[in-house]
Structure formats: structure tokens, C-alpha cells
Image (cartoon, rainbow, N blue to C red; front, side, top):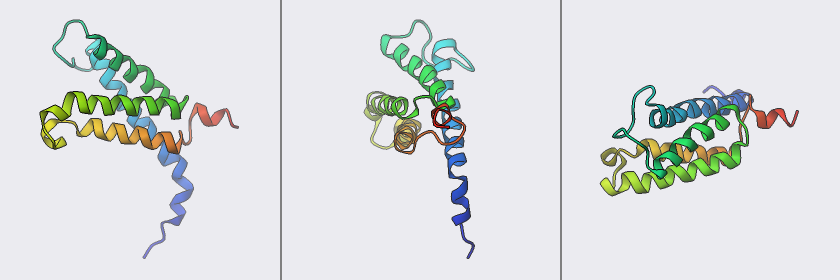
Length: 131
């Protein structure tokens, strides 16, 4: 049986990849609300205060996560945003995420919660300040 212990040396890079890809996907949700890019999200027209807040958190918070700036506190806020989004927008439509369309919100919530505890990993502003 192969030993996977050697892979532990690459943990900071795997964490960075998770952080960066998650941020890029998350930013896209904000740009869909704010700029209808790459496609529009929602019914169109002006955003409600809650939708505007969510969009700004997704773009600004996503950019902070992308570069690894204040990763832990920003990830905490974004995890909370996704928990609120799940229970307000998805859960009322059914118990199971496959039915209510909330699987992505749950996944974002827990990836961001993981980043609160794990930190930014490699290639981050947070870790550059330590060097």
C-alpha cells in the first residue's frame, strides 16, 4: 500500500488551490447580481438591499479570499452569509438540498468555515506578512 505521508508537504498549496478556486467561483455569483456577468442572476431590475449586500459581500469578500487578505475574518463573514442564504432562500423550498437547490450554499458555507480554522495557505497576503 502506498504511503501518502509525502503529500503532507503540499498541504499549504492544496489549501491555496481550494481558497483560490472557491473565491473565483464565489465572485462570479456577485458579478451575476451586480453586472449580469457572465449571465444575469435574478429577475432583473434594481437589487433589493439584501441582494445588494449579498452581491457586495460576494465580490469584495471573494476578492479578499482570492488574494488571501484577512482570510479568517472574511471567511467567517462569508460562511455566515451562506448559512443565512441557505435558510432564507433554499430551506423553505424543501428539506433536501437536491430538492431546494441549496447544495452550493451549504458547500460554500462549510468551505469558508474550514478557511476560518485553516487559514489562507500558500500564496496569500496573510502569509506574506509573516515572512
